[in-house]
Image 1 (cartoon, rainbow over the protein chains, first blue to last red):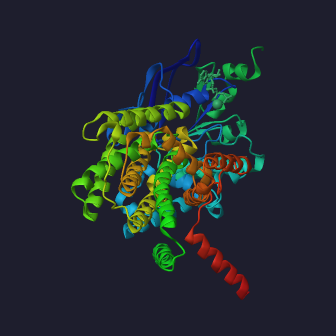
Image 2 (tube, each protein chain N blue to C red):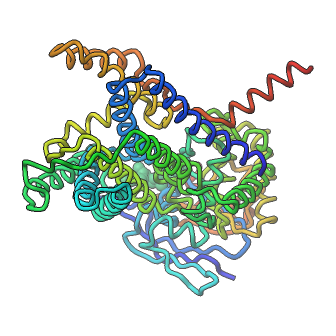
Length: 258
Length: 320
Ligand SMILES: Nc1ncnc2c1ncn2[C@@H]1O[C@H](COP(=O)(O)OP(=O)(O)OP(=O)(O)O)[C@@H](O)[C@H]1O
Ligand SMILES: [Mg+2]
């Protein structure tokens, strides 16, 4: 079943067309990769899909419990509440807050704590906080971060910051998870760990994952389908085996000649 | 659950003990009339500055209009207590002042809080100026002459009670879903939005709560000083409140308490220096900012929980 449908999506920055006429789709419970050279427009595409920037043209629609919903021109927080969550290429954690708070903040929209309940510290406030905390710690456990709940996000090692970004995105209870270079700056061991974790959460939470990554071993290992972007345009789509043999892709990566 | 009760009871005990100790000190004559005056003014400043700290330190929105909301509370409460000169009237006046102030904050907050940094500061300054000019021209507020003979209802225990109430509201707000959402706006607005947090809503809410508590501070000010005029609520007053927040540490409520007390006491001591007073006061501020740029306490908070934890830890060490 098609979960997210993207039609003729275009974004112009002045004279530069960062994303040009992109048509693609994501199926339910699928693991898809988006690859392409530096500056191809991958992050811009994520920003369009999550509402951070508004498309110049095209439509993004999502199959939800309330039928088909058009996402373009929705505010980012609405898009997130519709079930799209993301991580950022240039890490954007809540640096001066604890690891736990980072995760709890992502639960805000699903948290039914009332204003007066918390001001007057009613017993129900403590019940809800305790339940929420348990949920957050359970998520952190999957990523082996349960011992770091009280640490400030900015004090985490680099790899852990990337993992916290994923936990935080998962805490919004998404249907689709967008990961923007989750393995950037990780060593091979950490990357292998991450590969396993991504596959695990995709199965466990039954979500769709769209992943931008330059590490080809990770991409070829994980992805069921791959989209290739170059100069804002989709130049290929297919299974890892198909993409590895694709002339255009090889050309794009090796640069012009041959 | 039991632990939470213990923490809350400890806080209650601290508040009650504080009240008893101060009364005792007054009774034995350590705190005289002059000292009580200083305490009341410190208390009012604490109320004003904790609200501003919520806006600046926790939601990260730079407001320079706090005196405007203080003015609303002062005038509303002064007018109400002038016809109902009882503690009940004071209570009604404070609630009404806070409500009007919150409403104004809501109306001006929705468009202005879209602005960033310097622009927001200028916009909020403009709002406070508009409020002052309206007060200056209305008949009911008695124009530039202002209101006088306001009944003395903001006695020391009332101020103490309101310090406790407003601080509890703000601290409980900060340590809840709402407060976390507010802080996420300060930390990274794009990430916050992308996690499903309606950042505009939380920014406005923090602004409204700050404005409501500013009104309570203003109400107490009016019913303690007993005369108010529009000139009392100019930009200098906003800056005085801002100084307390910055000096204590942006984002530390404990720091706001300490800074309000330090500045209040400094002001009291400097009374004897005549015209040199403002020079020395400013000098002290400059020195503090040079040597402690993050404020007296940075973002550190006093916490009963941490105190207990440290206590039990050291006890365990002792046992071993
Ligand atoms: N806000 C913006 N304003 C103007 N140009 C932009 C903006 N954002 C991105 N661009 C441009 O759009 C193009 C695509 O950038 P984008 O960040 O999407 O690439 P990318 O595929 O994510 O690259 P990388 O692999 O390096 O992360 C680049 O040329 C970039 O300079
Ligand atoms: Mg990118």
